[in-house]
Length: 400
View 1 (cartoon, rainbow, N blue to C red):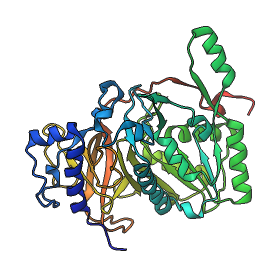
View 2: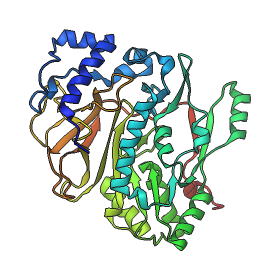
View 3: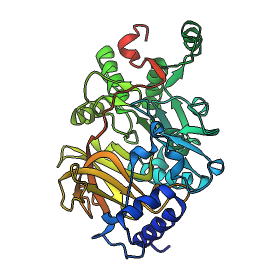
View 4: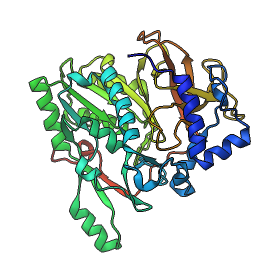
């Protein structure tokens, strides 16, 4: 199979999106962009971008970014908002399949997905996620995370977040409005980890760095012990949370990444090579895998150039940053997975550093842009319509 001509595909997609989407066409006209020019590494930054804020629910412009009638969408994909103002991205079936393929490739390459048998998630079950969060313009919306979870639906999955129906009823009676109450099932977590240890089951535990860190640290404090997991045991983080905020979870402290890898690795008796990280965003279909870097004492991520490109822009001027190890706002560019919405060139709110434009010296991966996430432009304040009632059972429940 021949390699895709990414640059030419980007050129074609940008032109066709401008034809389909008035909002983007007006941005391009304002910048007097020439769609017929050949796109190269040296001028890819000239492609007009769409600011991530256009997708925010509060701005009420997300429907203007569609290339097809909203009734023809598969569904809206909704971000796990930390601010109570989620991003809303309309996607058709073909675009959903492409971003799922991108994420699956990361799981296969960085977390040995094909050899995994069991998956442990700090998440509610798919049945619960299929009932939330709601509808927009009469069209169903689902969490972006729900579609990623469906990649694993044929695996044996343990969902640790449990919906508490009677607490919802009590809240409705006393407050006259619905609110979902979710807790971590500590007994289930303990039982599942012991089974994995005893039966040596190839297992991946994934999702929230804050929830993993807090629960495993409290477990060790309570029981003065950890686990001796098999070599096939893997840990997958993703979506940030190192500042203590992820989705609607908010800690009162930041998480030191080096401490996380050291303490959690020791807790499970696994090497640091058994950890993987993932970068993605609801607004773009790209997915980037990553690993711990001794060189940078940080997680380094890899953008596969066959997916597209990332570039950085100076925070104050938004000019392209051409050198490595300079901080800037991350722009994601891809021609794939954007046939139903204008998602080919998105300026995100992530602040990053590009470390190498071609190769990772530590893992040896080629044809990748190596980068790390430094911060976000927007505050993460951890609020929403769901109440996490008991997220740290090994700290709060004496009966475990």
